[in-house]
Amino acid sequence: MKALPKSKIWLFAIGQLGWAMMSGLISNWLVYFYQPDETAIEAGQILFVPQGRVILGILTIIGCITAVGRIFDAVTDPLIASLSDRCKSPKGRRIPFMKFASIPLALSTVLVFCAPVGQVSSINVIWLFAFVMIYYLSITAYCTPYNALIAELGHDQQERLNISTAISLTFIVGTAFAYVAPMVWGALEGSMGRVPAMRVTFAVMAVFAVIFMMVPVWTINEKEYVHTKPSEGNALSSLIKTFSRRRFRSSRR
Image (cartoon, rainbow, N blue to C red; front, side, top):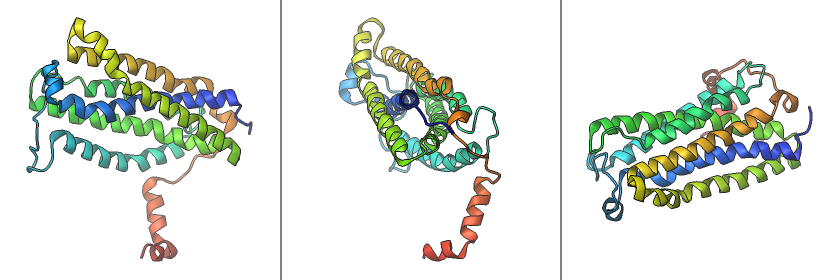
């Protein structure tokens, strides 16, 4: 297998820049958007979901949805990994997943912030729940194969270190882009209002994120750099085999 050139390493790393932007928007602005403080409300932020601890007096709507999303993410991680391992596409085992997950990831990220009713409504809660779940599924479908490629594209410790260094930098840059979103929507607020300005900002960032996430899809031929054979097993059978081994069971005690 060919060694991945430095130029390809950076093209691969650009994919991380894209998904880091989308992850940054959710992690930084989801709670801010749906549980605004008094300053944000005075600036024109709309309340879309019930506020305060409304679920058994313990959890907020946002807290419950994000908690379920994390559990859903933990369940889908091994499933996506298994599907990717068993993929028999002529394009490889990882690139096809990255290709088809890019647009759903960007679109679901934007739609998380596009609650359809302009006031507190149960419809908004359902909308938010649905698109947060789609977001978690989409980011798993992109990131799990993407991260698997780090070890597969790097044929020795130095190559893997070079890849890890590059993606660390693009992760920081992508997260930084998400942090500066208020500067963008702040410039637009005067002409269209706070909520539309935020949504336009997120949509523009999502367009760039799709382009970034597709760069490794367009520029890296996985088959040239990775020699892997599709796995014949699945997540369930792997778990059964693992827990059926006496040494593994005894090590858990």
